[in-house]
Amino acid sequence: MAALRDDAVTVLGGWPRLRKEPATLAPRPNLLDYEATRAAFSWEAARAGLSGLPGGGLNIAHEAVHRHAEGPRAGKVALRWIGKDGSRRELTYAALASDVRRFARALGTLGVRPGERVFLLMGRIPELYVAMLGALSAKCVVSPLFSAFGPEPIATRIGMGQGAVLVTTPELYRRRVEAIRSSLPSLRHVILVDRGGEAEAPAGTVRWAELFDGASDAFSVPATDPEDLALLHFTSGTTGRPKGAMHVHGAVLTHYVTGLYALDLHEDDIFWCTADPGWVTGTSYGVIAPLVHGVTNLVVEAEFDAQTWYSILAAEKVTVWYTAPTAIRMMMRLGAEAVRGYDLSHLRFMASVGEPLNPEGVMFGVEAFGRPFHDNWWQTETGGIMIANYAAMDVKPGSMGRPLPGIEAAIVQRQPDGTVRVVDEPMVEGELALKKGWPSMFRGYLGEEERYRKCFAGDWYLTGDLAKKDEEGYFWFVGRADDVIKSAGHLIGPFEVESALMEHPAVAEAAVIGKPDPIVGEVVKAFVALKPGFSPSEELRRDLLGHARKRLGPAVAPKEIDFRESLPRTRSGKIMRRLLKARELGLPEGDLSTLESDERPAAERSP
Ligand code: AMP
View (cartoon, rainbow, N blue to C red):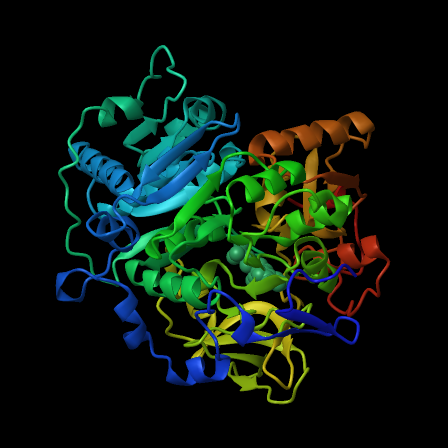
């Protein structure tokens, strides 16, 4: 093990625990004493860190930009953007607020009303941030989409969300949206961020520059109730369409508190969250939390490349870095030596989220950067970090840490009568549950009350994750209780992938699993049974892979496809993905009592 860069962290007995010496840490961590902070914490008192709107109102964009633009941070850099080609753009809080107001006003000019849904489909370009904060300022509901989605996931989400506005780029519009536009009657406006100066905007679209350039920025944030809807984040379940998790403006209090305690943000920080705002981490922590704290938020347009990332960390003097296990594992492949030669002396705190971070990943941080990666846990539904390893708290590599002050977490076991039993004994596996009522808790799944209701048992929100809690209150991730797939930190619903495969003329049935992968956690693997008249071939496999990629986009499409005569189903007709997975991995097949006895070839099934 390489020597630690300072004496703030010491390794005891192999690597079971990284001991922190809080008194030696500089700057002083915001959460110095976990127990004391937790005991004294109240959400009401935490609101003092926000400025609010008259009459108890809260608006995310007001807290993130407008209030800073009117105060001493007006001239401070809010967004520092580094483009794919190395170009740079900096926006101070005052400049960002002005652009944000201009966009909010433009929405009004287009006749877009508060509460209407504004979808964003772009790479990490400055306009994405302006549009998001502008729409929030105008009290529209923002739904960011990942730019690597294909037409199918885009159409499903805009359709479900009844999107009134889409902000995208000419290229993405042409490749992913134009063909589905007629299936989206709610979509009144498509705004194209035309950075290259396209000759003419396609019919039915308006150029960003046309709306924006020379327009007035006279706009003030209207009265916003903390319970007003702000964000619509789609997430995946095992069955059915994606779920639209609805979040309110009051969530900004969680963003503030987690920025303070879990990310330990301080006034002079240069913060870099590597997540894309198309996923919840990239919104809550790639946009909102750092700006609420008034720090400088670094935005990097390019995708992962270890050497590029190291040079950015060094050149930009990043102090707090929030990234993900897939990236950490890719860096590990190159070894700690690849980091040598970069001056990373400014880097103070490193955190990770989105998938299990193996102990080796935590220790790689120590070896390569002189700091452990601090794992934390949350999900789309929770809106913000719920469990974390804090700057001043000992790290147990492999553990997600302890609940945020203000959050009560427990391991529960579901009972036959629908209630849950809280497991008090340490290291007993159960479902991770959170006592409901924190500010960023999702307020519903769009149009699916029953699905939402089923997430709760009494006062507990049931997360769908299996975990354990040790005698010191640290939580340990065990796995998902359902069949959703986590690939490179992105949650993928098997049903969405299966549905796209089933649209191919050769496919009779399809089942999709997550196949363990040492770098990205899981890769999407599909099994298909063919219709009569089709037979398995390399060519057909390639055709199916291409079909899925075209419909779903590279982020969601399967990477592997195997042919099967038939797929195992329960007597009630459900495909047994778990059995396919067990067979694929050579694991015990488990309880087969519900397996349909004759796995008849798909061709013989009635449709
Ligand atoms: P998403 O809603 O896309 O953010 O995905 C949330 C899911 O990612 C959680 O329910 C977990 O299954 C997984 N996850 C998030 N953070 C962690 C973590 N630190 N360790 C293990 N799994 C995690």
